[in-house]
Image (cartoon, rainbow, N blue to C red; front, side, top):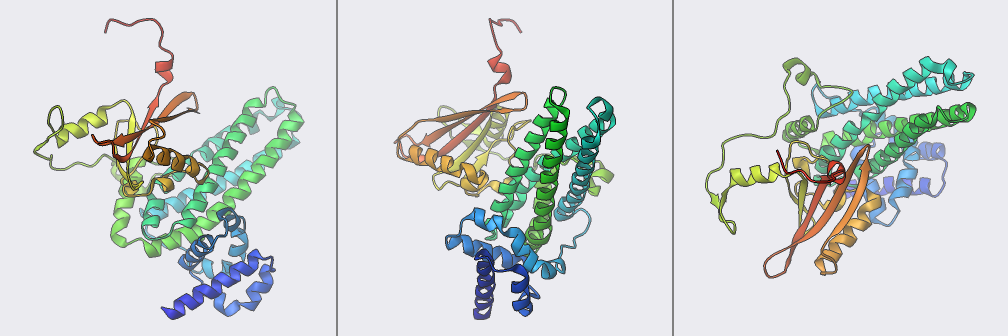
Amino acid sequence: MGKEKERLSALKDIIEQLHAGENPQQVRAKFKQLLANVSPEEIAKIEEKLIEDGLPREEVRRLCDVHLAVFQDSLEKQMVDVPVGHPLHTFMEEHRIFSRNADKLGTITKKLKKADDLESAKAERKHLEEVVHQLMEKESHNVREENVLFPYLEKHGITEPPAIMWTEHNEMRENMKRLRALMETAPKADFDKFASSLEALGKEIGESLSSHIYKENNILYPAAMKTIAAEEWPQIRKQCDQLGYSVFTPEYLRTTGKKAAKGSGAEPEGQIPLEPGPLSLQELEAVLDSLPVDISFVDRQDKVRYFNQPKERIFPRTKAVIGRSVQKCHPQKSVHLVNQILDDFRNGLRDSAEFWIQMGPRLVHIRYFPVRDKQGSYLGCLEVTQDITDIKNIEGEKRLL
């Protein structure tokens, strides 16, 4: 154990030298022997320690590519080798498709820049729409990582690499919004300016996606393979199935035609003595799942304890989040808001908090309420999310079925 601590301390010192501005090539030459067999989980532990010691997460992320340049030779010898059907195999197959589409995006944007106007670039524009649609499908991949893989990594003590990857997911989401908005302005925009902006944004998306995929394939996934227990992977696969796929469907689903379904089994018996009237567990679960809203309950320790499962959830949830800190269920940039709401609820400073956001053409209303017992003691927080688009449009009266 002493030797392991010594080794991690030496590797941490190397990364600190890089952050201080040391030349990566010189560092590689200087510590060649030590760097020969660095493992992905060691890098994950070092990043955890650096952030724990006060280095801002954003600084660690900013220099991730520098770390990789130093550790590259060792990492590429340890790439994940998993069978077809394993969740990591599916994630990596999706990565191959996203990489191909990012390359196509770069090629198309260069062709568009050489065109005279939008009319003469009809074929490229159609091809561009197809590629952008494929890249937008990365959201399904991100959601599965954030709601299934990341919580399992966190349970095994790997918290910082998932947090950094989630930050990058959010940046990619913003870039894709920018790309979609730019394409919508095309008919009215100055063509030369549009084509130049498109080429620059396509290059930015391609480079950031390439860097992100490399980090996940060479650090995150190998670390997951070594830390997550073999018996946990079937659970991860089942929860990924429940969230669904987009650009790549695993072979076991293609060949069997199997569709992911909610858990089933023997129906529980007995009554829960609720006030004003008892319900069976089966009835209570059915009632909660029939509500036209998504609900999630976070206990007084800020741990996710329950969520209902209506037919169509607005924000996906999987069993992997049960027991997870609610702060880790939100992007880093919004954690301060989460903490403020929870602190205000605990201290009796507010009785609700609400937000509304536009999700494409739909308007989504998100409300938070403190949950208290009959004596007023704080038990936790309830999140209620509802698509209010159609409700907002209601006018007049409707008295007949």
